[in-house]
Image (cartoon, rainbow, N blue to C red):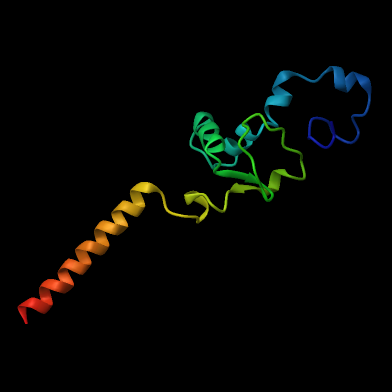
Amino acid sequence: MNRYGLLDESQNKLDYVLALTVENFLERRLQTLVFKTGMAKSIHHARVLIRQRHIRVGRQVVNIPSFMVRVDSQKHIDFSLTSPFGGGRPGRVKRKNQRAAAKKAAGRDGDEEEDE
């Protein structure tokens, strides 16, 4: 319970364990922590990011929104290295726009050479 941040070190008695509520457990879910750190716009967006494998905890990509995050792992929540959000390969729309811009630039270069 201490490792998951549900109880403090001083709260090692049974009364503290019995006083835990559902909200205490829900606060330690990956989905909630991704939203509270500002990586997602809403709790629903956080769930989508996690399911689409954009979030990692440490070096491990996690795609389970109900993943219980330990206190020492909380600071290691980040975007996946392969995710477009984390500097990986650009998404489909961005790649399409880059190709169109490259074609347009190549077309302009070709037109200038023909005019001279």
